Image (tube, helix red, strand yellow):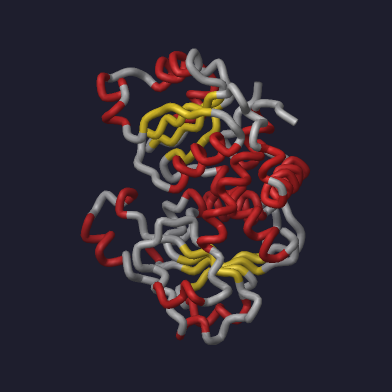
Length: 304
């Protein structure tokens, strides 16, 4: 039995296999419509989510399986003080696989140690979000046809953004990757990520506060929102939340082949006027999430 807690739990070969399976599902969804007949996915979301939870549910239903679960901690026995370990031990009795989101870093790892079924980390605090990273990688593959020799700009909240940390981890294993980090000083990428990931893997990277200055260099621009829920101080959030707003004017110097990604939800960091730009890939990205999660559920349940 195998769980997915961190994107590095998967080898690059396994990621390529998942991307290939997801691509095949996109081409012929009917061939996969009954792969998980009789299987049950439990979605344990101790933190609010729209896309990730519904994407997991859509993935399991598209495979012929069923879902059960809760969408906030207050509607679970966690509100009574039940431990994560006891929750997953119990839910393992009712399901074949668990997708879990939790505000505390490390909670899905604890869950995987106690569950009787595979556990998928659907986001733990500011730490990891491996299925969003798989979604990002599938999107990059469909947009660019490759994972190597790309200049990727990450813009916005690089300090608390678990999607950013996970994707940088994943990309660090490919050749010719250059990372551009664009953020206000207060939201810079944590030094441990720079040291343990970028520098350890000899990844060329640059830091800047000026998005427009680096725009012409980018093959991919990964926008993120400034997350209110990660701030202890409301004043800091309000001061920083509009630091970077992507508009058509700011894209004037960008490559025609640029792809704009965003893990969503968007607040106002991308103007709706950008949505009409063919380089805007974020809603295509949301769609790809369903297919890569279908591929992952099959892999962890050992279904061919």
